[in-house]
Length: 411
Image (cartoon, rainbow, N blue to C red; front, side, top):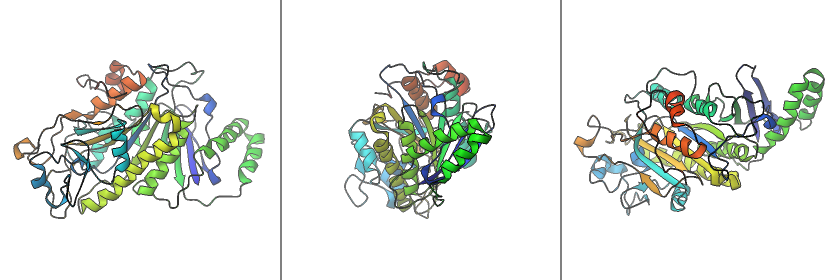
C-alpha cells in the first residue's frame, strides 16, 4: 500500500513527501515525547473520529422504548423484533444492525453511547457546526487551531520529553482535520493509490540526501522504516473517507502507527458523507458499517495497546425527529457520540433522555440536546491523560467553565 506522510511543527518549515511502496515517513520517532498519565501502568491513546455531515442519532441508536419514536420515524423506524430489527443495547435503546462489532464491544463493556448530545452550537449550518465541533469554541469563526491540538500542547509531559516542546499528534487523511491543527507538532499520514515505484528508489534518495542534506537524510532513513509500519494492509479495494473500505483502511494504518512504543498517542480522522436528506436507511447502513469496520480495525491493529485506547466518534449536530418526504431527515440538533476502546468504562448508554413528544422536541422538530459534548471530551481528557480541568476550560475549550468534566468514563 502506498501512502503519503508529512510532518510539521511550529517554527519550522514543513517537509512533505510521497512514500513509495509503503516506505518512508519524514519523522523521527526518537524525538517524540511520551505523555504523562495518572496511572503508571497505563500508556493511553486517544482517537477522535469526525463524522462530517451530521449523523442521525435516532437511526444509529434508535430509542425504540420511547412511545413517540415509531410515529416520528414511520417507515424507517426500527424494532426489537420485526423487519427493521435493531441490535438490543438495553430495553430502551437499540443499535443499528450494521454495527455488530460495536455491539460486541458494548457487551464486553468496552463501548458506550452518549445520546441526546450536542456541541454548544444551535443553528444548522454544516460549516459553522463543524467549526464549533472541531475548534472547541462555543461559537463559529475560530479556525486557527483545534481543541485536540491544544489539548496536546497542554498535557503534562512524561520523563522522556528531552528537548521536545510539545507532544506530537497524528492527522489521518489528505488534509489534517481542523480539530488537530495548531501549535503542537502533527504527523500526517494518508493512504494513497499511487502505483508503487521502483523498490530501489528509497535507497537512491537516501544516498542523494546523505550528501546534500544530512538532517533530512536521517529523517528519511527513519521514515522509510516507519512508513512500513502503516503499509502492507490486506485491502482488496481502496476508497476515500466516505467509503466503508476507506474508513477501515484509514483506521488500520492509524492504529499501526499509534501502536508503536514510541509512536503518537493522539490521532484525528474525518469520515465524510453523513448528510442523509434522502433514502437514509440504505445510506446509513453503508456508512455505519464502515465506521463499525474502523472500530474493529483499531482493535485488531492496536494489539496490546487496545486496552489503553479510547476512540470518540462525534458529529456536528443531529437530524430532525420527523422523516421528510424522501425517506430522509434534515438538519437538527441532538445526536449521539460513540465511545469505544479497551480503556472505556462501557456497556451503557449515557443519556438524560428528553423524550420525543412534540412538546419535548426542540423547536417542535429536533431531538433536544441534554448533554454537552465538551463535558464528555473533558472527562476523557481528565481521566485518561490527567489533564487539568482548569486548563481545559481556559485553553482547550475556551469559555467552558460552566461545563464540568463527566466523571467515570474511563475504566
